[in-house]
Length: 519
Length: 84
Image (cartoon, rainbow over all chains, first blue to last red; front, side, top):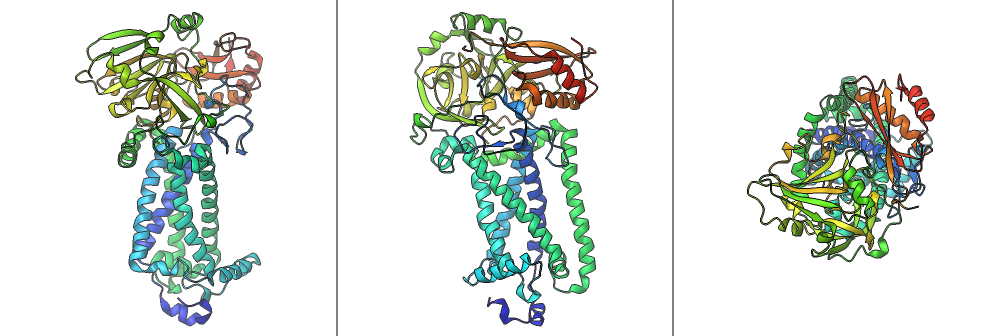
Protein backbone atom coordinates (compact mmCIF):
# COMPACT_ATOMS: atom_id res chain seq x y z
CA UNK A 1 0.00 0.00 0.00
CA UNK A 2 1.40 3.45 -0.89
CA UNK A 3 2.29 5.90 1.87
CA UNK A 4 -0.63 7.52 3.64
CA UNK A 5 0.10 11.00 2.33
CA UNK A 6 -1.15 9.91 -1.15
CA UNK A 7 -4.70 9.58 0.18
CA UNK A 8 -7.33 12.12 1.05
CA UNK A 9 -9.74 11.77 3.94
CA UNK A 10 -12.56 11.04 1.51
CA UNK A 11 -10.57 8.32 -0.21
CA UNK A 12 -9.75 6.64 3.06
CA UNK A 13 -13.37 6.76 4.14
CA UNK A 14 -14.45 5.29 0.83
CA UNK A 15 -12.06 2.35 1.08
CA UNK A 16 -14.02 0.38 3.65
CA UNK A 17 -10.95 -1.51 4.78
CA UNK A 18 -13.11 -4.38 5.92
CA UNK A 19 -12.86 -5.89 9.38
CA UNK A 20 -14.24 -9.38 8.78
CA UNK A 21 -16.05 -11.33 11.44
CA UNK A 22 -13.11 -13.74 12.00
CA UNK A 23 -10.85 -10.79 12.71
CA UNK A 24 -13.22 -9.29 15.23
CA UNK A 25 -13.95 -12.66 16.83
CA UNK A 26 -10.29 -13.64 17.27
CA UNK A 27 -9.60 -10.15 18.63
CA UNK A 28 -12.34 -10.49 21.25
CA UNK A 29 -11.25 -14.03 22.18
CA UNK A 30 -7.69 -12.78 22.48
CA UNK A 31 -8.85 -10.05 24.85
CA UNK A 32 -10.60 -12.58 27.08
CA UNK A 33 -7.68 -15.02 27.07
CA UNK A 34 -4.90 -12.49 27.54
CA UNK A 35 -6.64 -11.30 30.69
CA UNK A 36 -6.82 -14.87 31.99
CA UNK A 37 -3.15 -15.36 31.13
CA UNK A 38 -2.05 -12.19 32.88
CA UNK A 39 -4.12 -12.83 35.99
CA UNK A 40 -3.07 -16.47 36.36
CA UNK A 41 0.52 -15.39 35.67
CA UNK A 42 0.32 -12.90 38.53
CA UNK A 43 -0.98 -15.69 40.76
CA UNK A 44 2.12 -17.74 39.90
CA UNK A 45 4.44 -14.78 40.42
CA UNK A 46 2.85 -14.02 43.80
CA UNK A 47 3.88 -17.47 44.93
CA UNK A 48 7.52 -16.37 44.71
CA UNK A 49 7.53 -12.62 44.16
CA UNK A 50 11.23 -12.35 43.37
CA UNK A 51 13.23 -12.53 40.15
CA UNK A 52 16.83 -13.54 39.52
CA UNK A 53 19.33 -13.74 36.69
CA UNK A 54 21.49 -16.27 38.55
CA UNK A 55 21.71 -20.06 38.51
CA UNK A 56 20.37 -20.10 42.04
CA UNK A 57 17.94 -18.03 44.05
CA UNK A 58 19.93 -16.94 47.07
CA UNK A 59 17.88 -14.46 49.11
CA UNK A 60 19.23 -10.95 48.66
CA UNK A 61 20.57 -11.57 45.14
CA UNK A 62 17.32 -11.01 43.25
CA UNK A 63 17.18 -8.17 40.69
CA UNK A 64 13.53 -7.44 41.40
CA UNK A 65 11.10 -8.31 44.17
CA UNK A 66 7.51 -7.52 45.01
CA UNK A 67 7.66 -8.30 48.69
CA UNK A 68 9.14 -6.69 51.77
CA UNK A 69 9.34 -10.02 53.50
CA UNK A 70 12.84 -10.87 54.68
CA UNK A 71 14.27 -14.34 54.30
CA UNK A 72 17.18 -15.91 56.15
CA UNK A 73 20.44 -16.16 54.23
CA UNK A 74 21.08 -19.60 55.70
CA UNK A 75 20.05 -22.69 53.78
CA UNK A 76 17.61 -25.19 55.21
CA UNK A 77 16.08 -23.08 57.97
CA UNK A 78 12.99 -21.84 56.15
CA UNK A 79 10.60 -23.09 53.55
CA UNK A 80 9.78 -21.46 50.24
CA UNK A 81 6.07 -21.43 51.06
CA UNK A 82 7.01 -18.73 53.58
CA UNK A 83 7.52 -16.39 50.64
CA UNK A 84 4.11 -16.86 49.08
CA UNK A 85 1.87 -13.78 49.02
CA UNK A 86 -1.90 -13.82 48.86
CA UNK A 87 -3.52 -12.00 45.93
CA UNK A 88 -7.07 -10.75 45.86
CA UNK A 89 -9.36 -12.77 43.55
CA UNK A 90 -10.03 -9.46 41.82
CA UNK A 91 -6.41 -9.46 40.65
CA UNK A 92 -5.14 -13.03 40.56
CA UNK A 93 -6.74 -16.06 38.95
CA UNK A 94 -7.91 -17.52 41.21
CA UNK A 95 -6.14 -15.61 44.02
CA UNK A 96 -5.68 -16.43 47.73
CA UNK A 97 -2.52 -18.53 47.44
CA UNK A 98 -3.74 -21.05 44.92
CA UNK A 99 -0.70 -21.48 42.73
CA UNK A 100 -1.76 -24.97 41.64
CA UNK A 101 -5.05 -23.76 40.23
CA UNK A 102 -3.33 -20.64 38.91
CA UNK A 103 -0.89 -22.82 37.00
CA UNK A 104 -3.74 -24.86 35.52
CA UNK A 105 -5.59 -21.72 34.46
CA UNK A 106 -2.37 -20.46 32.88
CA UNK A 107 -1.98 -23.75 30.99
CA UNK A 108 -5.57 -23.85 29.79
CA UNK A 109 -5.49 -20.17 28.80
CA UNK A 110 -2.23 -20.48 26.90
CA UNK A 111 -3.46 -23.50 24.96
CA UNK A 112 -6.54 -21.61 23.85
CA UNK A 113 -4.56 -18.41 23.28
CA UNK A 114 -2.06 -20.14 21.01
CA UNK A 115 -4.87 -21.90 19.14
CA UNK A 116 -6.66 -18.59 18.67
CA UNK A 117 -3.39 -16.99 17.57
CA UNK A 118 -2.69 -19.71 15.01
CA UNK A 119 -6.18 -19.32 13.53
CA UNK A 120 -5.73 -15.54 13.43
CA UNK A 121 -2.32 -15.65 11.74
CA UNK A 122 -3.45 -18.32 9.26
CA UNK A 123 -6.45 -16.22 8.24
CA UNK A 124 -4.36 -13.06 8.22
CA UNK A 125 -2.07 -14.56 5.60
CA UNK A 126 -4.82 -16.52 3.86
CA UNK A 127 -6.87 -13.39 3.22
CA UNK A 128 -3.96 -11.10 2.43
CA UNK A 129 -4.86 -8.77 5.30
CA UNK A 130 -1.32 -9.20 6.61
CA UNK A 131 -0.29 -6.42 4.19
CA UNK A 132 -1.94 -3.78 6.32
CA UNK A 133 -0.16 -4.91 9.47
CA UNK A 134 3.31 -6.02 8.44
CA UNK A 135 5.40 -3.13 7.10
CA UNK A 136 6.80 -3.70 3.63
CA UNK A 137 8.70 -0.43 3.32
CA UNK A 138 11.45 1.16 5.40
CA UNK A 139 9.36 4.34 5.26
CA UNK A 140 7.39 2.91 8.15
CA UNK A 141 10.10 3.98 10.60
CA UNK A 142 10.20 7.74 9.83
CA UNK A 143 6.41 7.76 9.55
CA UNK A 144 6.07 6.00 12.89
CA UNK A 145 8.50 8.48 14.41
CA UNK A 146 6.34 11.35 13.17
CA UNK A 147 3.24 9.74 14.69
CA UNK A 148 5.09 9.12 17.92
CA UNK A 149 6.15 12.76 18.19
CA UNK A 150 2.59 13.81 17.50
CA UNK A 151 1.28 11.62 20.35
CA UNK A 152 3.97 12.98 22.67
CA UNK A 153 2.72 16.48 21.99
CA UNK A 154 -0.85 15.33 22.75
CA UNK A 155 -1.96 15.73 19.15
CA UNK A 156 -3.76 13.18 17.05
CA UNK A 157 -2.67 12.14 13.55
CA UNK A 158 -5.37 12.81 10.95
CA UNK A 159 -7.65 9.99 9.89
CA UNK A 160 -5.89 9.87 6.52
CA UNK A 161 -2.90 8.31 8.30
CA UNK A 162 -4.95 5.24 9.18
CA UNK A 163 -5.35 2.83 6.26
CA UNK A 164 -6.64 1.32 8.46
CA UNK A 165 -3.52 1.43 10.64
CA UNK A 166 -0.89 4.10 10.84
CA UNK A 167 2.83 3.35 10.76
CA UNK A 168 3.17 3.28 14.54
CA UNK A 169 0.34 0.80 14.83
CA UNK A 170 1.86 -1.39 12.12
CA UNK A 171 5.16 -1.53 13.97
CA UNK A 172 3.44 -2.11 17.29
CA UNK A 173 1.15 -4.86 16.06
CA UNK A 174 3.91 -6.59 14.12
CA UNK A 175 6.11 -6.55 17.22
CA UNK A 176 3.40 -7.91 19.51
CA UNK A 177 2.05 -10.57 17.15
CA UNK A 178 5.24 -11.84 15.56
CA UNK A 179 7.92 -11.13 18.17
CA UNK A 180 6.47 -10.65 21.66
CA UNK A 181 3.84 -13.41 21.55
CA UNK A 182 6.30 -16.09 20.29
CA UNK A 183 8.83 -14.79 22.83
CA UNK A 184 6.33 -15.37 25.64
CA UNK A 185 5.69 -18.90 24.40
CA UNK A 186 9.40 -19.70 24.05
CA UNK A 187 10.34 -18.36 27.49
CA UNK A 188 7.27 -19.98 29.03
CA UNK A 189 8.00 -23.50 27.79
CA UNK A 190 11.64 -23.08 28.83
CA UNK A 191 10.41 -23.24 32.42
CA UNK A 192 9.04 -26.74 31.85
CA UNK A 193 11.20 -29.46 33.47
CA UNK A 194 10.30 -31.82 30.61
CA UNK A 195 11.68 -29.35 28.06
CA UNK A 196 14.74 -28.52 30.16
CA UNK A 197 15.69 -32.12 30.87
CA UNK A 198 15.34 -32.96 27.18
CA UNK A 199 16.75 -29.77 25.63
CA UNK A 200 19.05 -28.29 28.28
CA UNK A 201 20.97 -26.22 25.70
CA UNK A 202 17.82 -24.32 24.80
CA UNK A 203 17.12 -23.42 28.41
CA UNK A 204 20.73 -22.47 29.10
CA UNK A 205 20.68 -20.22 26.03
CA UNK A 206 17.91 -18.22 27.71
CA UNK A 207 19.95 -17.83 30.87
CA UNK A 208 18.71 -20.98 32.57
CA UNK A 209 15.47 -21.31 34.46
CA UNK A 210 15.82 -17.95 36.19
CA UNK A 211 16.78 -16.24 32.94
CA UNK A 212 13.71 -17.66 31.21
CA UNK A 213 11.55 -16.67 34.18
CA UNK A 214 12.87 -13.11 34.23
CA UNK A 215 12.55 -12.76 30.45
CA UNK A 216 9.01 -14.10 30.66
CA UNK A 217 8.25 -11.46 33.27
CA UNK A 218 9.73 -8.67 31.12
CA UNK A 219 7.64 -9.93 28.21
CA UNK A 220 4.56 -9.81 30.43
CA UNK A 221 5.32 -6.20 31.36
CA UNK A 222 5.67 -5.28 27.68
CA UNK A 223 2.45 -7.11 26.83
CA UNK A 224 0.54 -5.46 29.67
CA UNK A 225 1.98 -2.07 28.67
CA UNK A 226 0.93 -2.62 25.09
CA UNK A 227 -2.60 -3.56 26.14
CA UNK A 228 -3.00 -0.44 28.27
CA UNK A 229 -1.68 1.79 25.47
CA UNK A 230 -3.67 -0.03 22.79
CA UNK A 231 -6.98 0.18 24.63
CA UNK A 232 -6.29 3.76 25.62
CA UNK A 233 -5.60 4.85 22.03
CA UNK A 234 -8.67 3.03 20.73
CA UNK A 235 -10.76 5.35 22.87
CA UNK A 236 -8.63 8.47 22.47
CA UNK A 237 -7.74 8.52 18.77
CA UNK A 238 -10.58 8.54 16.23
CA UNK A 239 -12.71 6.33 18.45
CA UNK A 240 -15.75 6.94 16.26
CA UNK A 241 -13.93 4.99 13.55
CA UNK A 242 -12.16 2.43 15.76
CA UNK A 243 -15.25 1.33 17.63
CA UNK A 244 -17.33 0.94 14.49
CA UNK A 245 -14.49 -1.09 12.93
CA UNK A 246 -14.23 -3.36 15.94
CA UNK A 247 -17.93 -3.87 16.58
CA UNK A 248 -19.54 -3.79 13.14
CA UNK A 249 -16.56 -4.25 10.81
CA UNK A 250 -17.57 -1.18 8.88
CA UNK A 251 -16.50 2.45 8.49
CA UNK A 252 -19.90 4.10 8.75
CA UNK A 253 -19.47 6.37 11.75
CA UNK A 254 -23.22 6.92 11.92
CA UNK A 255 -23.33 3.79 14.09
CA UNK A 256 -20.70 5.10 16.50
CA UNK A 257 -23.03 5.55 19.47
CA UNK A 258 -24.33 2.02 19.06
CA UNK A 259 -20.78 0.67 18.77
CA UNK A 260 -19.69 2.61 21.84
CA UNK A 261 -22.43 1.11 24.00
CA UNK A 262 -21.76 -2.40 22.74
CA UNK A 263 -18.01 -1.96 23.32
CA UNK A 264 -18.42 -0.73 26.89
CA UNK A 265 -20.92 -3.48 27.65
CA UNK A 266 -18.53 -6.08 26.24
CA UNK A 267 -15.59 -4.80 28.29
CA UNK A 268 -17.69 -4.83 31.46
CA UNK A 269 -18.92 -8.35 30.67
CA UNK A 270 -15.35 -9.59 30.14
CA UNK A 271 -14.18 -7.98 33.38
CA UNK A 272 -17.04 -9.65 35.26
CA UNK A 273 -16.25 -12.96 33.55
CA UNK A 274 -12.61 -12.76 34.68
CA UNK A 275 -13.61 -12.08 38.27
CA UNK A 276 -16.34 -14.73 38.20
CA UNK A 277 -13.74 -17.28 37.11
CA UNK A 278 -11.76 -16.54 40.27
CA UNK A 279 -14.66 -16.85 42.66
CA UNK A 280 -16.13 -19.92 40.96
CA UNK A 281 -12.71 -21.59 41.09
CA UNK A 282 -12.31 -20.76 44.78
CA UNK A 283 -15.81 -22.00 45.55
CA UNK A 284 -15.19 -25.33 43.81
CA UNK A 285 -11.46 -25.92 44.05
CA UNK A 286 -11.52 -29.71 43.77
CA UNK A 287 -13.93 -29.65 40.84
CA UNK A 288 -11.95 -26.88 39.15
CA UNK A 289 -8.81 -28.99 39.59
CA UNK A 290 -10.45 -31.98 37.92
CA UNK A 291 -11.69 -29.99 34.92
CA UNK A 292 -8.60 -27.83 34.43
CA UNK A 293 -6.12 -30.70 34.78
CA UNK A 294 -8.16 -32.81 32.37
CA UNK A 295 -8.02 -30.01 29.80
CA UNK A 296 -4.38 -29.03 30.29
CA UNK A 297 -3.36 -32.70 30.20
CA UNK A 298 -4.22 -32.63 26.49
CA UNK A 299 -1.35 -30.20 26.00
CA UNK A 300 1.03 -32.21 28.16
CA UNK A 301 0.19 -35.37 26.22
CA UNK A 302 0.78 -33.75 22.85
CA UNK A 303 3.90 -31.76 23.65
CA UNK A 304 5.60 -33.07 26.79
CA UNK A 305 4.80 -36.64 27.83
CA UNK A 306 6.92 -38.21 25.11
CA UNK A 307 10.03 -36.19 25.99
CA UNK A 308 12.51 -38.31 27.91
CA UNK A 309 15.15 -36.60 30.05
CA UNK A 310 18.79 -37.03 29.12
CA UNK A 311 20.68 -35.43 31.96
CA UNK A 312 23.11 -38.35 32.11
CA UNK A 313 24.25 -37.91 28.51
CA UNK A 314 24.02 -34.13 28.10
CA UNK A 315 27.13 -31.96 28.40
CA UNK A 316 25.48 -28.53 28.57
CA UNK A 317 25.16 -28.38 32.34
CA UNK A 318 28.35 -29.46 34.09
CA UNK A 319 29.82 -29.29 37.57
CA UNK A 320 30.84 -25.71 36.77
CA UNK A 321 27.15 -24.77 36.81
CA UNK A 322 26.47 -26.02 40.33
CA UNK A 323 24.58 -23.47 42.41
CA UNK A 324 25.85 -22.00 45.64
CA UNK A 325 22.41 -21.91 47.21
CA UNK A 326 19.50 -24.34 47.27
CA UNK A 327 16.06 -23.48 48.62
CA UNK A 328 13.84 -26.11 50.13
CA UNK A 329 10.15 -26.60 50.59
CA UNK A 330 9.27 -28.37 53.80
CA UNK A 331 11.69 -28.78 56.67
CA UNK A 332 13.03 -32.16 57.88
CA UNK A 333 10.96 -34.58 59.95
CA UNK A 334 11.04 -33.92 63.68
CA UNK A 335 10.68 -36.25 66.65
CA UNK A 336 6.90 -35.69 66.65
CA UNK A 337 6.68 -36.63 63.00
CA UNK A 338 8.86 -39.73 63.01
CA UNK A 339 10.80 -41.01 66.00
CA UNK A 340 12.11 -43.74 63.71
CA UNK A 341 13.67 -41.18 61.37
CA UNK A 342 15.27 -39.23 64.21
CA UNK A 343 16.69 -42.45 65.67
CA UNK A 344 18.18 -43.34 62.28
CA UNK A 345 19.67 -39.86 61.95
CA UNK A 346 21.26 -40.14 65.37
CA UNK A 347 22.95 -43.41 64.39
CA UNK A 348 24.37 -41.91 61.22
CA UNK A 349 21.66 -43.70 59.24
CA UNK A 350 22.80 -47.20 60.21
CA UNK A 351 19.23 -48.08 61.23
CA UNK A 352 17.64 -46.30 58.28
CA UNK A 353 15.52 -48.49 56.02
CA UNK A 354 13.30 -48.01 53.02
CA UNK A 355 10.38 -50.33 52.48
CA UNK A 356 10.16 -51.60 48.94
CA UNK A 357 6.68 -52.99 48.53
CA UNK A 358 3.74 -54.01 46.43
CA UNK A 359 0.40 -52.89 47.81
CA UNK A 360 -1.46 -55.09 45.34
CA UNK A 361 -0.10 -58.30 46.89
CA UNK A 362 1.23 -57.17 50.22
CA UNK A 363 4.78 -58.23 49.37
CA UNK A 364 7.48 -56.03 50.85
CA UNK A 365 11.13 -55.98 51.80
CA UNK A 366 13.32 -53.62 53.76
CA UNK A 367 16.43 -52.08 52.26
CA UNK A 368 19.24 -50.48 54.20
CA UNK A 369 21.24 -47.58 52.86
CA UNK A 370 24.24 -49.88 52.40
CA UNK A 371 22.17 -52.27 50.33
CA UNK A 372 20.95 -49.43 48.17
CA UNK A 373 24.50 -48.25 47.63
CA UNK A 374 25.50 -51.64 46.19
CA UNK A 375 23.11 -51.15 43.26
CA UNK A 376 24.41 -49.67 39.97
CA UNK A 377 25.06 -45.98 40.49
CA UNK A 378 23.98 -43.15 38.23
CA UNK A 379 25.13 -39.53 38.45
CA UNK A 380 24.35 -36.35 36.55
CA UNK A 381 24.05 -32.57 36.86
CA UNK A 382 20.46 -31.33 36.83
CA UNK A 383 18.40 -28.28 37.64
CA UNK A 384 15.83 -28.55 40.35
CA UNK A 385 12.83 -26.32 39.78
CA UNK A 386 10.02 -25.71 42.20
CA UNK A 387 6.62 -24.92 40.68
CA UNK A 388 6.82 -21.70 42.71
CA UNK A 389 9.71 -20.59 40.49
CA UNK A 390 12.97 -21.07 42.38
CA UNK A 391 15.70 -23.30 41.04
CA UNK A 392 19.14 -24.70 41.81
CA UNK A 393 21.68 -26.77 39.91
CA UNK A 394 23.35 -29.77 41.57
CA UNK A 395 25.05 -33.05 40.80
CA UNK A 396 22.80 -35.84 41.96
CA UNK A 397 24.00 -39.39 42.52
CA UNK A 398 21.92 -42.43 43.33
CA UNK A 399 20.21 -45.48 41.94
CA UNK A 400 17.62 -45.61 39.18
CA UNK A 401 14.12 -46.25 40.46
CA UNK A 402 13.74 -48.92 37.76
CA UNK A 403 16.75 -50.78 39.20
CA UNK A 404 15.31 -50.56 42.68
CA UNK A 405 11.94 -51.88 41.57
CA UNK A 406 13.58 -54.84 39.89
CA UNK A 407 14.52 -56.10 43.34
CA UNK A 408 10.85 -56.96 43.76
CA UNK A 409 10.71 -58.79 40.44
CA UNK A 410 8.56 -57.98 37.39
CA UNK A 411 5.83 -55.38 37.62
CA UNK A 412 2.98 -56.92 39.59
CA UNK A 413 -0.19 -57.53 37.64
CA UNK A 414 -2.61 -54.69 38.28
CA UNK A 415 0.09 -52.30 39.56
CA UNK A 416 -0.11 -49.10 37.52
CA UNK A 417 1.63 -46.49 39.64
CA UNK A 418 4.51 -46.05 42.05
CA UNK A 419 3.82 -44.37 45.37
CA UNK A 420 6.73 -42.90 47.33
CA UNK A 421 6.13 -41.88 50.93
CA UNK A 422 8.24 -39.75 53.22
CA UNK A 423 9.16 -40.01 56.89
CA UNK A 424 8.14 -36.35 57.01
CA UNK A 425 4.62 -34.99 57.22
CA UNK A 426 2.95 -32.65 54.78
CA UNK A 427 3.46 -28.96 55.46
CA UNK A 428 -0.24 -28.30 54.95
CA UNK A 429 -3.35 -30.33 54.30
CA UNK A 430 -6.04 -28.99 52.02
CA UNK A 431 -8.54 -28.57 54.86
CA UNK A 432 -5.92 -27.87 57.55
CA UNK A 433 -6.65 -31.21 59.20
CA UNK A 434 -3.79 -32.83 61.15
CA UNK A 435 -0.86 -33.50 58.86
CA UNK A 436 -0.34 -36.81 57.10
CA UNK A 437 2.84 -38.28 55.58
CA UNK A 438 4.08 -36.54 52.45
CA UNK A 439 3.79 -38.72 49.34
CA UNK A 440 3.89 -38.60 45.55
CA UNK A 441 2.77 -40.99 42.83
CA UNK A 442 4.34 -41.58 39.40
CA UNK A 443 2.89 -43.22 36.34
CA UNK A 444 4.90 -46.05 34.77
CA UNK A 445 6.53 -43.91 32.07
CA UNK A 446 7.82 -41.44 34.66
CA UNK A 447 8.97 -44.15 37.06
CA UNK A 448 11.00 -45.91 34.35
CA UNK A 449 12.72 -42.78 33.01
CA UNK A 450 16.52 -43.00 33.30
CA UNK A 451 16.61 -39.80 35.35
CA UNK A 452 14.05 -40.90 37.91
CA UNK A 453 16.34 -41.93 40.73
CA UNK A 454 16.61 -42.43 44.45
CA UNK A 455 19.47 -40.02 45.23
CA UNK A 456 21.77 -40.39 48.22
CA UNK A 457 24.49 -37.90 47.24
CA UNK A 458 24.49 -34.29 46.14
CA UNK A 459 27.58 -32.60 44.73
CA UNK A 460 29.70 -35.64 45.64
CA UNK A 461 28.69 -35.64 49.32
CA UNK A 462 25.96 -37.40 51.28
CA UNK A 463 22.70 -35.47 51.08
CA UNK A 464 22.14 -32.58 53.45
CA UNK A 465 19.34 -33.28 55.89
CA UNK A 466 17.25 -30.38 54.66
CA UNK A 467 17.52 -31.65 51.09
CA UNK A 468 16.32 -35.14 51.91
CA UNK A 469 19.02 -37.13 53.73
CA UNK A 470 19.73 -39.89 53.60
CA UNK A 471 17.72 -40.64 50.43
CA UNK A 472 15.29 -38.68 48.28
CA UNK A 473 13.61 -38.91 44.92
CA UNK A 474 14.80 -37.10 41.83
CA UNK A 475 12.40 -36.96 38.87
CA UNK A 476 14.16 -34.70 36.39
CA UNK A 477 11.25 -34.43 33.96
CA UNK A 478 9.04 -33.01 36.71
CA UNK A 479 8.88 -30.11 39.13
CA UNK A 480 10.14 -30.55 42.67
CA UNK A 481 6.80 -31.34 44.27
CA UNK A 482 7.09 -34.85 42.83
CA UNK A 483 10.47 -35.44 44.49
CA UNK A 484 9.82 -36.90 47.90
CA UNK A 485 12.52 -36.22 50.50
CA UNK A 486 13.39 -38.42 53.50
CA UNK A 487 12.01 -41.50 51.72
CA UNK A 488 10.29 -44.11 53.90
CA UNK A 489 8.74 -46.41 51.31
CA UNK A 490 8.47 -47.07 47.60
CA UNK A 491 5.48 -49.16 46.60
CA UNK A 492 3.65 -50.47 43.58
CA UNK A 493 0.01 -49.42 43.78
CA UNK A 494 -2.98 -50.15 41.59
CA UNK A 495 -4.42 -46.66 41.52
CA UNK A 496 -3.27 -43.41 43.09
CA UNK A 497 -6.91 -42.44 43.60
CA UNK A 498 -7.04 -44.84 46.55
CA UNK A 499 -4.50 -42.82 48.58
CA UNK A 500 -4.68 -39.48 50.35
CA UNK A 501 -7.31 -37.23 48.82
CA UNK A 502 -7.00 -39.20 45.59
CA UNK A 503 -5.19 -36.67 43.45
CA UNK A 504 -1.82 -38.45 43.32
CA UNK A 505 0.34 -36.72 45.89
CA UNK A 506 0.52 -34.36 48.83
CA UNK A 507 0.93 -31.25 46.71
CA UNK A 508 -1.74 -32.48 44.33
CA UNK A 509 -4.07 -32.96 47.31
CA UNK A 510 -3.24 -29.83 49.26
CA UNK A 511 -2.28 -27.32 46.57
CA UNK A 512 -4.20 -28.79 43.64
CA UNK A 513 -1.11 -29.44 41.55
CA UNK A 514 -1.33 -31.93 38.68
CA UNK A 515 -0.19 -35.53 38.94
CA UNK A 516 1.83 -34.83 35.82
CA UNK A 517 4.43 -32.25 36.88
CA UNK A 518 6.15 -31.87 33.52
CA UNK A 519 5.33 -28.15 33.31
CA UNK B 1 27.33 -26.06 63.74
CA UNK B 2 26.01 -28.63 61.30
CA UNK B 3 22.45 -29.78 60.75
CA UNK B 4 23.29 -32.78 62.91
CA UNK B 5 24.48 -30.62 65.81
CA UNK B 6 21.61 -28.16 65.63
CA UNK B 7 18.76 -30.02 63.96
CA UNK B 8 15.31 -28.77 63.04
CA UNK B 9 12.78 -29.36 65.81
CA UNK B 10 9.19 -28.29 66.26
CA UNK B 11 7.30 -26.37 68.91
CA UNK B 12 3.56 -26.79 69.24
CA UNK B 13 1.48 -23.80 70.29
CA UNK B 14 -2.24 -23.48 70.78
CA UNK B 15 -4.27 -20.74 69.18
CA UNK B 16 -7.90 -19.75 69.46
CA UNK B 17 -9.83 -18.04 66.68
CA UNK B 18 -8.08 -19.66 63.73
CA UNK B 19 -10.54 -22.15 62.29
CA UNK B 20 -11.41 -21.40 58.67
CA UNK B 21 -9.26 -21.55 55.55
CA UNK B 22 -9.30 -17.75 55.30
CA UNK B 23 -8.25 -17.36 58.93
CA UNK B 24 -5.41 -19.85 58.50
CA UNK B 25 -4.19 -17.98 55.44
CA UNK B 26 -4.37 -14.58 57.14
CA UNK B 27 -2.59 -15.85 60.24
CA UNK B 28 0.18 -17.55 58.25
CA UNK B 29 0.72 -14.47 56.05
CA UNK B 30 1.20 -12.37 59.16
CA UNK B 31 3.48 -14.92 60.83
CA UNK B 32 5.66 -15.30 57.75
CA UNK B 33 6.23 -11.54 57.76
CA UNK B 34 8.14 -11.88 61.03
CA UNK B 35 9.48 -15.42 60.87
CA UNK B 36 12.88 -14.50 59.45
CA UNK B 37 13.47 -12.04 62.32
CA UNK B 38 12.45 -14.70 64.83
CA UNK B 39 14.66 -17.39 63.21
CA UNK B 40 11.61 -19.54 62.61
CA UNK B 41 11.18 -21.55 59.46
CA UNK B 42 7.82 -23.18 58.94
CA UNK B 43 4.36 -23.00 60.41
CA UNK B 44 1.35 -25.25 60.13
CA UNK B 45 -2.09 -24.89 61.62
CA UNK B 46 -3.89 -28.11 62.43
CA UNK B 47 -7.61 -27.48 62.71
CA UNK B 48 -9.79 -30.06 64.45
CA UNK B 49 -13.18 -30.13 66.08
CA UNK B 50 -11.55 -28.92 69.29
CA UNK B 51 -11.99 -25.28 70.27
CA UNK B 52 -8.32 -24.49 69.94
CA UNK B 53 -6.10 -25.00 66.91
CA UNK B 54 -2.57 -26.41 67.02
CA UNK B 55 0.16 -24.24 65.54
CA UNK B 56 3.30 -26.25 64.81
CA UNK B 57 6.38 -24.15 64.28
CA UNK B 58 9.63 -25.62 62.98
CA UNK B 59 12.98 -24.11 63.83
CA UNK B 60 16.55 -24.93 64.75
CA UNK B 61 17.00 -26.56 68.12
CA UNK B 62 19.09 -23.63 69.32
CA UNK B 63 16.18 -21.22 68.76
CA UNK B 64 13.44 -20.61 71.26
CA UNK B 65 10.30 -19.29 69.59
CA UNK B 66 9.33 -15.83 70.81
CA UNK B 67 5.79 -16.49 72.02
CA UNK B 68 5.13 -12.84 72.79
CA UNK B 69 5.99 -11.79 69.26
CA UNK B 70 3.84 -14.57 67.81
CA UNK B 71 0.94 -13.68 70.12
CA UNK B 72 1.27 -10.02 69.21
CA UNK B 73 1.23 -10.55 65.46
CA UNK B 74 -1.68 -12.98 65.69
CA UNK B 75 -3.71 -10.56 67.79
CA UNK B 76 -2.96 -7.74 65.35
CA UNK B 77 -4.14 -9.84 62.41
CA UNK B 78 -7.55 -10.92 63.66
CA UNK B 79 -9.43 -12.21 66.61
CA UNK B 80 -6.67 -14.73 67.15
CA UNK B 81 -5.28 -15.54 70.58
CA UNK B 82 -2.23 -17.56 71.53
CA UNK B 83 -3.37 -19.54 74.56
CA UNK B 84 -0.48 -21.94 75.17
